[in-house]
Length: 294
Image (cartoon, rainbow, N blue to C red; front, side, top):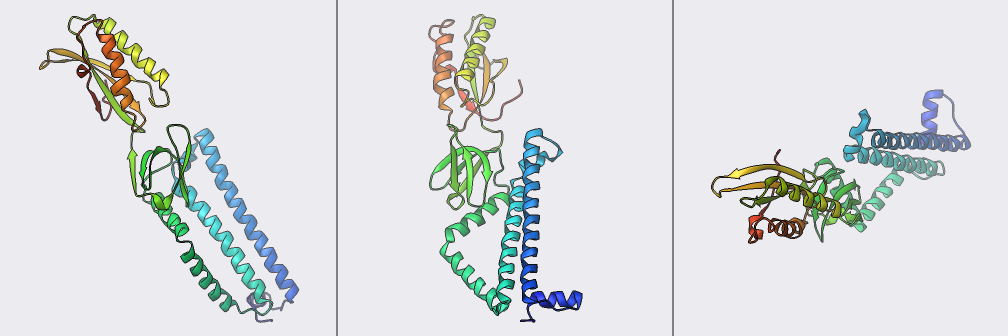
């Protein structure tokens, strides 16, 4: 009994032997100390994240680095598990269980569990891959394709699930193992531009006021789909067509272009008919791409 790891370690440093009672007590004390240290690390990490979110301080990079947060939590969980695992082994060794046999049997059990929970292992591996490959980041607007297609803003990238918030403000938890493709929208949405042809002979000032009023009305009415205030461009002359064109730029939720192509376009056609009775919807083409500075 005196040849256990704890007794050998204590004897090496102090030159005295320990009774089994004192050895067990020492194991418990060491576990408590390490556990408290791990809890402290976790608390400090969460505190840094919360403060950076609330105040946008110098540590604001934390909120934009899910790999940092996930890695810290993963290390904390790993240290906690390893501490308990070794402490339990040292505890059993005091009662005659061979520590080498305990470690070997635990490895076999762990291997069996991993085969029985392959889905969990896949979730963790893919989750870490998503985080460290920068496939997406917290705050990104993405389209995730897998068993289903989900579009939303990334709220959290975990080891089991990736959490998105969709158009309807629902929180969608996507199992990492079902993620096949990730499409990012780098500008936080889709840029749509409605090219409005101003009727020849129309009062330009009145036409511009009508267009701006309609665009602002769309933003107020469809604020969850139109992500930012519409930008009214400058009037440009197109010599080939002999007409003047005005672009209204919208940043919209992905997949919702029909809102601009139908509702806004029809509103503009009806408004422009007051200047030109035969005004048609083909005179308002809608394109998608980066917004140009007016």
